[in-house]
Each structure stands twice: as structure tokens, then as C-alpha cells.
Image (cartoon, rainbow, N blue to C red; front, side):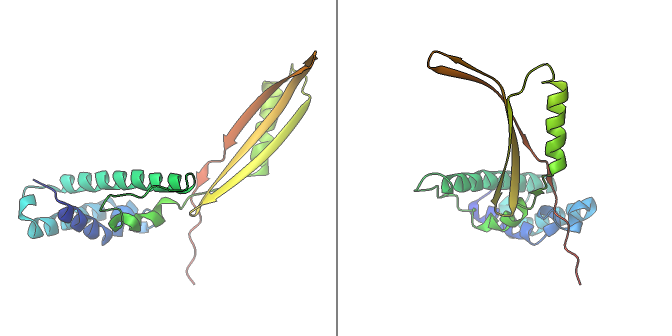
Length: 193
């Protein structure tokens, strides 16, 4: 059993024809029997078109697709990280990157929903359980929300100045800083009219 770039591309194109395998936004994604049938159909088409793959099993097809998907995610992360950093950026040389780009839309569909209640509850817990015996000079609460490709991450930071000492020309500030990230939740599905 030897995979070639052409047979890998063919595999990805056949997988794309079966959203139940890759699109977790679809109701069909949770249907295990449908997924198994889709993998069997993909395997049969591969065997018919590539004699060198005559001995593959459905598990081989599933594992190969998962490996390609994992590599695609790594390459996508490199391109995204580079585009937000250096001027030159990272350009992938992987030949299947373009073929697998249909997965991009399914990767960033989680949003975070930070609430004021979450931040207040966290602060109350810290003050009552941890800092009760300590004199608190000042508390800063900041919230940062970053959105990228339909993905939003909100981070709340609580900075608490516990003590402030001055000795000669030096000021020492003791700070306790806690950072939390709101848990991502799936967005509500849009209702069809």
C-alpha cells in the first residue's frame, strides 16, 4: 500500500463530498453509522481508482485522513501565526494545503461569552478565600477580547496591589495577578425561515 500525492488528493476530495465526516456543524456529523458508510464508500472509490491501494481498509482511510487533517492544522497555524508576526510571513509548501482549505470554515466556529457575573464571582472568591488576611491597596480589572476568523477569545485579568514599600529611591510593589479565559461555547444555530 503506497500513497501518492495524487491518491491523497483524491482521498481529500472524496472526503469533502461527505460532510458527515468533517463538518461538525452538521447534524449528520454525530451519526456514527452514516460516517462508517461514508468511509466505506470513500475506500471503495479509492480501490477502484488506485490499484496500488487494493489492500487498504476503512481504518486505513480514516487514519490517513486524520493524519492529513492534523498536518493541515499545523500548517494553517504556522501561516496564521506568521501573518500576525513577521513581515515576510510563512508560506506553506505543502501541496495539499489548498485542497484541504475547505476545513477552515469549520475550525473557527466557537465564540466565548464572558459575563460580568463570571468576573464578579471570581473576584469575590479571591478576596474572601485567599486575600482576607491581606490589606488590599488597589484592584484593577481588565478584559481583553480578541477576534480572529469567527473565533473570539476573551481574557479577564485581575491585578491586585497587595503592598507598596518605599526604601530610599526604590519602590517595591507586590502584585497578585490572576488571568482567566472564558470557556468557549458553540454559537446558536441560525433558524431557517
